[in-house]
Amino acid sequence: MILSYPQNYPLSQNLSQLTGNNLVNWKIHTFPDGENLVTLPDNIPEKIYLVCDLSHPNSKILDLLFLSDALKLNGASHITLVAPYLPYMRQDTVFHKGELVTSKAFAKLISSYFDKLITIDAHLHRFKKLEEIYSIPCINLEAATLIGKWIKNNVKNPLIVGPDAESLQWVEKASKEAQAPFVVCEKNRLGDNEVKITISGLDAYKNLNPVLVDDIISSAHTLIEASRVLKNAGFKKVGAVATHALFSENAFQLCISEQITPLVTANTIAHSTNEVNVASLIPI
Ligand code: R5P
Image (cartoon, rainbow, N blue to C red; front, side):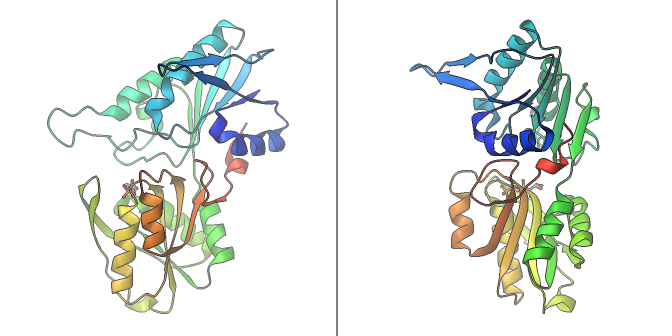
């Protein structure tokens, strides 16, 4: 059985069609005081895939844990969490004295309620493998090849641009698939909504069409700043393809105002920009 968080229904439907597994939407009722009532499906099988993208995790995590607990009490023996977007991966060290490494705390919580984790483009930077912090079997899939394929089919003469050092891991693979060259920028994050980006070595690529490739669009300042740097360097049009469409607050509007086009994401988080379908990657 695939049990889907309501917002992830389109991706879960794809998964169900591909695998023939029974698909059930999970029912949540929110009371006037903000507490949630989660209702169990009928006929709970032993093996369950729970699909929940976990963007804006604080509003979803309790439901997820309640559900896992209740499923186990009612017949399930193995629950795989399919979290196409895995949160709390960017706070992977103590950046300032006193801060928690929330990646570890979150991993401990998830590991105690689920038997297995499947995710896509987890933000692995200081941790090299999810198993360093998760104590359950984990599968971290990569959307880079699908992103490269999308670029190959939709952008003429692309130049793949990674906005920061971490992006090299995705950019290399996407550029191989798209049969296009790549460059990687240097990024300095000055605050939640402020980044500084520098790039060199563009002279050889002046006739190409730059497409930024990144794992996450959150405040979108990384994309916007990188797009400005590229436009200042003489490129007329800059596009972007990313895996996770977090688009916090007014980030999507900012990208539109900045004329980042095409602007495309994978369907790990449901959004109007979803054009890269990751369902075929997920091994269930
Ligand atoms: C950070 O290293 C990630 O790879 C992304 O570049 C980052 O999370 C994007 O965040 P924002 O959209 O807030 O600039």
